[in-house]
Image (tube, rainbow, N blue to C red; front, side, top):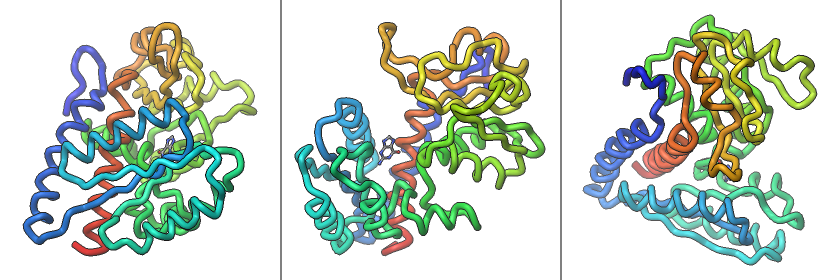
Length: 285
Ligand code: GUN
């Protein structure tokens, strides 16, 4: 893919291409009587989680992956959720298990993520997969940063020796993003809520990844001329969905930028499909 005059990194378009590629591979597996399966567990009724889960189900349906959704009440106990995860670990037709986050307060999230069979951990959140990512890379890496790497790769963005700045240090995005950029030979800085003079760092970024979850947090004047800007934010505001980056201001300076919606979000979903397929091939392909 090439960046056009609109400077847009078209995550939605790239994700569609990936879905075509995945559909073909799923068809090949089906000829061998293997149907990849993803099971999502949704605990409670968080509105955003319900939307994300429905996107994941629809994407599975488009490519022929079997998807099932287990809904559990918001007062589900730790023991009940653990037993559901263990049941899925032992079900051979389930290749991927995804427990949608956040979980209600009574649940110990870390313990739940540890209970998922690492071979079925399509989120890449299990400590074994996190460790593999840090030491040698892993197929089952977290979907959002892996999707961002895929997007950069499909646009032939060269990372070697570039200054990459990640704003946000979450386990889901910021930390794994750091490792992936580093493994691709970027010089990586991770900024967070205690960073002094954030603008000093963002202004140096050839590649700027914003994953803070605050609407329009990165203003146009914080962006370096010619930067590649990746906006992970999905924030609901009076103007509809907005990212973490003030889009119009940043676009004036950037060489390329991901829109919200239509940038990182579709790549996250496409990567979940990739991870499910890879988990299936690895286990019984
Ligand atoms: N909640 C927000 N992002 C994610 C994700 O990538 N995986 C899961 N399981 N929950 C999330």
